[in-house]
Length: 341
Image 1 (cartoon, rainbow, N blue to C red):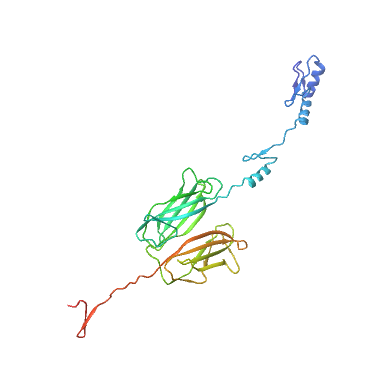
Image 2 (tube, one colour):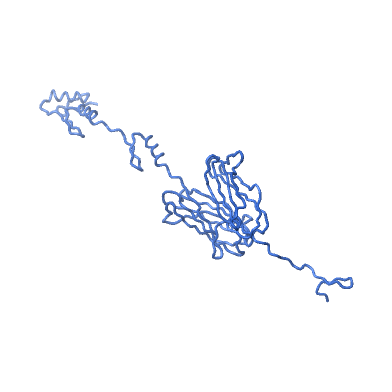
């Protein structure tokens, strides 16, 4: 590349030789002025200006700014660590806070016991937002009869705007279905984030026991409770419960029961462990019996992860019942069914 003199047309191999030529051979031409764009200082050569800028106005290092809080960092790695630790996504948390079955204009907490025959059921489920911001919650459930036939399937259904605030509840209501069998079970899932639905809590258990029936007086009771590990790692799991008769007298207090006891062993993720009463108790009082159940994890420092408080059963005395199965009149060594003609 050659540099041409604008005054005489001569060619030079470098900018520096061209500038020297102009100074020496064209003294009538005023020397060029190179002005600093940052402070206005003037220089008679491009090299002088470049050296000035490098020394006085060095290029500042890049700044990496957090898009969420505005904090500044000198490297991308520092910014990434800041976002991962300070602005980590809040875990999705919620609770199935209430479960009710409506029938014949009445409501009872699920599981429900001993309702009249021929009713139509309507399920009500309340979900609670346990996060620090408003969330759009959803629900899914199905109800199955003793043969596994689906009596009702509801959802997935999502709440409409405005969404549920932090610590608030939302009620989901299904459709009516016939209650014509003695036992129904249900599966309930509370959901969040409709764009990528996540199950935050699940209930699997009885909806209804003994339509038009009850436990007869004088039977023996024995408790079975199954715990489910919803975590991603194995955990020790324990269960305690208390049973009271209709007079509030404790008939069974079950404590210090851990899976594998007396050598507690872990329950694997998505696996269950059944806890069983070591003995039985007499159902010898009529009326409503109640039970309190607590599920625990971490045997070294126990944490309660779930609980149930409600009806255990309804005990009724057996109604005296019998019938005349045969009636005869004997005469002259002969018998005839009454009336005899």
